[in-house]
Length: 153
Image (cartoon, rainbow, N blue to C red; front, side, top):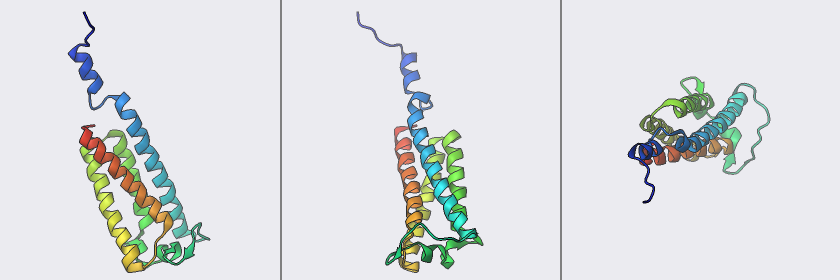
């Protein structure tokens, strides 16, 4: 006679809210959020206390041109502050929200990233490396949430 787990045990292992399964993606979500908060915080600090940028300013890569452009402020608020707010909400959602809500939030962030990259390339004519890091973090969260949603977690 071979051992077969009960249906209750099988259900417990595959439940979408199982901490053993959710722990790694949660840790990754929170790491991406923390990195996004750090970079957005740096860019926010630069907006109000300008100092030398840790970024090359030559050719297409020119952080100063991007950060000092008219496009770097929306409705009187620096885009970096919007980034801080976005990552704060993403962090809160990572802790409590269902996969569908996290996917919608990260999808909205990904759409904004597309608009920001378009603005950098075709309106400003320069790219900010720090901004690119933030964009990649948002896209990584979107990819993670897409995978989590597809997996039913």
